[in-house]
Length: 399
Image 1 (spheres, rainbow, N blue to C red):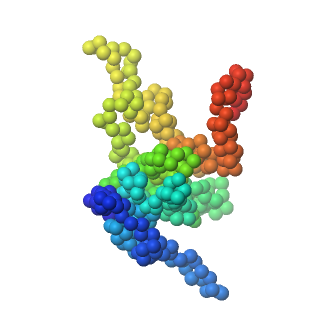
Image 2 (cartoon, one colour):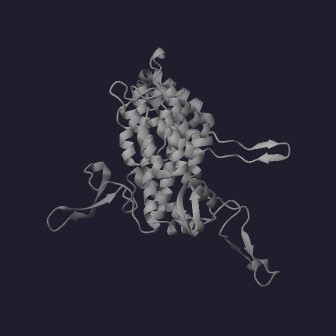
Image 3 (cartoon, rainbow, N blue to C red):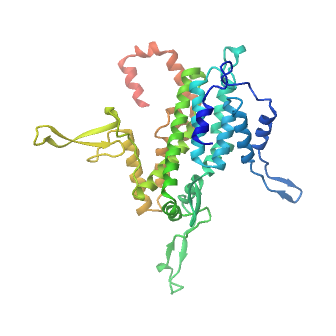
């Protein structure tokens, strides 16, 4: 699917039915669903039949055919999965852009429809969106989709890169000529470990990969994360917080991938534009007065720096904090490759844009119910909370 197709798919099908009919029971819809299932591994006695991947080519063909006759969020999700597995992140981003367009422009009539018999209940739609964060399908496929492809080195996914940074159980030990002198033995990092490629292999793949392909994947992962964030926002505004959905698991994976790609582009000397130069919003740049005094014209000497950087060791924005974490990771990966700290810092980076409840789900899932109950209690007793005494306020600091 290219951009011209996307533009046509965002046009009303007819004046009377801008989203067309609901084709859930159309034969093509059933064929698409079955083709996306694949077959799990099966065992008959001592015989093991290998699992079969979904027929993504067929899924994509059927989804595109259906979208020529209907506007259906479920079909777009199938198309997004097929496009990711068949074409990569650029096509995946276009599908999320289409889904976002359906929600922004066709909310009243897009399929699956709101339940008119139950006060326009949006559950059918929110359940469709939740499949974008299914561990066994979408999230697994995101982790396994290649984010870099090199003819000489190979193709590697986020899962491969995560494995490459996992500490190995045993180092590869190379003995010296003196077979009995283990004190002079040294550990040598192999090109591949039992768990997967090494960081050096990943770096080599990014170095050999076509720079335009790497840049396209960087842009696609960044925009895809933005689409998911906007979809969350739009749906929450339309259905209220009680029916809101969180797409943070998928969004965080895309953000993590984008950070990896951005780092590799910087390593190759290619900058990634993080703040639009055309933006006049004062929040988009940090103005730093250099030397603390006027120049020859009597005006302050000002240095404009993007939010990606920071001056004088002082961090003033969240973007700068995330960049600082990236710099810390770079140091440890370069100078202390056996340190587990980068694994923890990467987790902190991944959670930097998450909400409080999303962070709690990640680090302490058992506490989510208690936090949700507490937030509900606070909301229902807001007036009494506002009139709390100073002593009660100070006790809250224990949190």
